[in-house]
Image 1 (tube, helix red, strand yellow):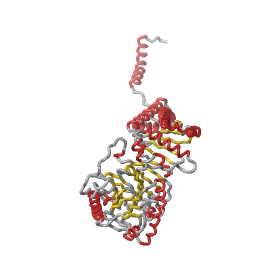
Image 2 (image 1 turned 180 degrees about the vertical axis):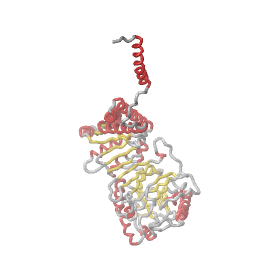
Image 3 (image 1 turned 120 degrees about the horizontal axis):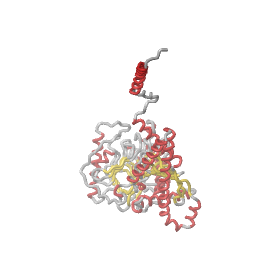
Image 4 (image 1 turned 135 degrees about the vertical axis):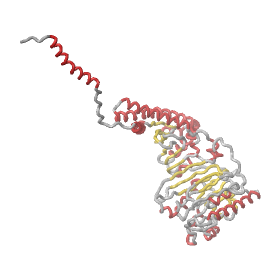
Length: 528
């Protein structure tokens, strides 16, 4: 074999290396292939909303499972719980009597207090040693403070645990799960700060009751005691728990309501519209609240015919004087029938009468239009009637016998007496409303005490039965407070009582001056 020169062999090897080097260089410069995304990435806002949903749901589940504290409050065993809520506030469930709601704060959490049972040993100890009642208020305050602190700690643990656990299930990443728990704790802390900043210690002065109607007055006492004796939340709640203890200790009957002897109690009814159930409700309220006088602001009838007059006969047996003004569904035939009944005081043309220590004056509705649909001139006639009533009120004041309460059927007529009387009562619109008008007169419009009568079946939902108890100071004859009472309409068995205080009777407020004289007030239209 012929030997190949070494120079030739070196050249061949060099040629072979060039393609390989070029290939390696090309591969090194070529970008690496990108991974193919098998699952599309979610939008950042979608991921954020998903995290918030996990946090809220997890925190809520955590509160449901472990977020409650059993606390002995005085002689009672209670359970305190935080619940998500749009409006906040405090709800005290007093089974089997019903529930008490307080507008104590504005935050996305609500405090629920369930009164579970009365502890027999602690209750018997109070019976055996009545001197301990004097220290019960301080004991209740300490119990509530301790229970609230325990509830705060347990709620923090509950929301963090719930949000973290749900985050771990959904994301399967410890970091995301811990982020959910931290966000839940932040939200709870922010809610607690908001509740603290908006805390209203006087919310117990204006509670709302639902459940057994007869228990409501005994729970809070009378209006005068509330105004003068209590000004902080803990003391009011202590009084509340003490009275609830008495309710639970009663076996056959609930404790009687013992009103302040200086208080005049007025039951305001309106728009009965031939509902026979109204008389039994009124009689029950007269007995329960020790009512001194009943004021009916009209539309007792529906058509005002003589055939309907027999419907009015139970008025004589209601147990209290009956002050009445004519509504647009009441005829002069109806009015004359009532004028002949004993214990009935019919007010018309500004005529004033003193009943149960209060001086009333009123005027009948100038129209008799059953089932009307706002005829032309209705508003003007109401304004003229209101002006006549205002003139009569000014004459009474000039004569040194000022009127305490004016009564008219339609609010448009009642508005004309602004500045001539401290309080004017009306009805007609079938839902309650209260306002202080421009010149200082308070207008109190009552809802339908008959649940709108037969009209209640026309709508999808039955109209409620509404009435109210007004509390007057016997010396000054000024309104101190009122209880709005609402019962379920046809087929419903619910009851709610809410207490309201005029601004001048709130703790720390100065008494408001008497209404300033005014020649006229700005009227506003109301629907029939």
